[in-house]
Image (tube, rainbow, N blue to C red; front, side, top):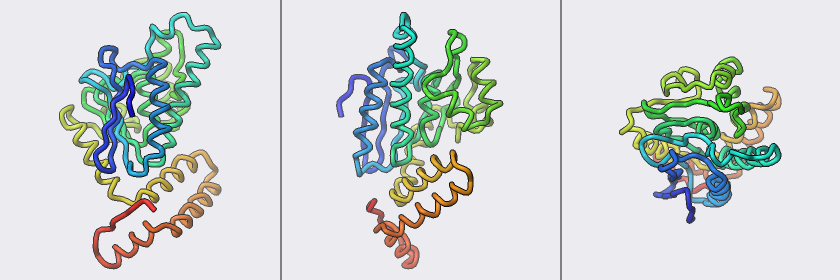
Length: 260
């Protein structure tokens, strides 16, 4: 996959995607958003990938928001379409059938914070800063932030972050509940890789079904969510990975999952 603003590497079952516009603090313009959507559509078909790590190029920023200059002069219709394009890209990332880890190495502001929120797990550098400063520009978070953030940390904390437009440390966001763990800057990518390696050893179909149950079940009444959980559990009994996992446990050996 060749992109203008993205770099992708794959080692075994783990892929690493880097947003690569360091001269613009990896900000999101139309090209980046289109390429993120195209990347997600392509990587979804890669049966070898079991975990994806997303990070930003350079030491300053994960993604420092949308490209403000690119938004200047937009009509209301164009602005709505720009929002919809970003939402489509982030939805495609959120629904990938494997675990996605955000390794937030610096500023994750506006669209960068929203990109991280579309991932399954957020690991952050001690130097990372999170925020949704759109209201300081007379705007609102429009790449999914007003929807994903309250689902992650609750409505009241989300209101504080959105209404204030302030920046928050990685430790503060860990306390809020949407950053999983915080690391020294030099340890971040190694920590993300280590976690990815752990997840990659698990049954990939099971991880995909678990992700589906968690993400869609969260929006359901618990009764419906439990029914879905049982259905997905039953579907796993049609897989070779299920037989391998149970067999390995009984035989006291490590399983060799194939994703089938």
